[in-house]
Length: 268
Ligand SMILES: [Zn+2]
Image (tube, rainbow, N blue to C red; front, top):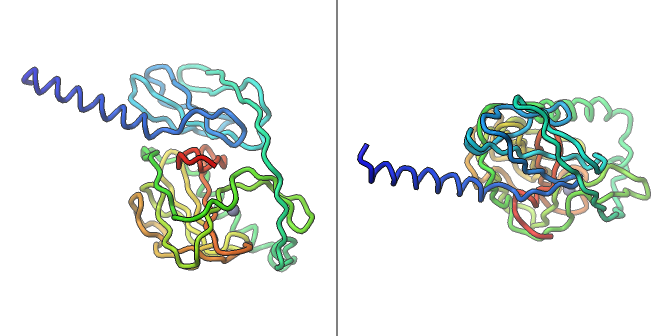
C-alpha cells in the first residue's frame, strides 16, 4: 500500500477507536453503576458474578463494561476472564427514598388471579435479559424520549406505605402519544402488555445490553424486527402500574439493571 494511504488508514482507524471510546460510559463503580475496566490484550471473555460481560474496544486493548447490581455490597470484587482474574472496587452510594400513592390498589398487591400472568411475564422478560449475542452494541445512546426526568434510577420506593424494590429504571415524563425512540440499534426481542409494565418493548443491542421501554400507549414494532438508533418504536402512555404518562426506561448489562443516565450521559 502507498505509505500515505497507509498513514491515512491508520489515522482513520485510530479516530474510529477514539470515537468508540467517546461512546463508552464513564467509569462509575457504585451499586447500580457501570464499571469500565481495561483488560489485558487478547481478553475475549469476561464474567462478573457468573454472568458474561460486554467487551468493547480492539483486541489489543479491550475494555469491559460491567453492570453492578443495586444490591451488591461495596468492597473489592473481581472479573474473571480468559486472561485471569481482575480485581476492582465497588464504592458505596446511597439513594433517596420515594413515597408513591397508587390508586389502583390491585397493582400494589396483585390479586391471586393475576399471579400466573405476572410470573409468565417476568419469565418472558428474564429470558431476554439472559441472552448474550456476539453482536457489538453501539454505546452512544440516543435519549428515547424528550421530556422531564421525573424519577431517577435507584430510588427506594414505598407504594401506599409498603416497601418495594428500588426503582430499576429512569422515568421521563411526557404527554401521552409523544414518540419513543430506540436508544441504540438492535433487535426487538419481546413486546407485550404486561401487568406492571403495561405496553412494553425489549430491545437486544448485543452482548447482554438490553433496553426496556414501559407504560407505552402504542407499540410500533414487532418481535424479531431490527431497529436503528433513534428509530420510532412506540409512544408514551400510562399503561400498567403508573401515576401519569411517562416512559420507564431501563438498561440491563450482564443481567443487571444499571442507571440509564450513565449511558445517556445526562446529569440528574
Ligand atoms: Zn419507572
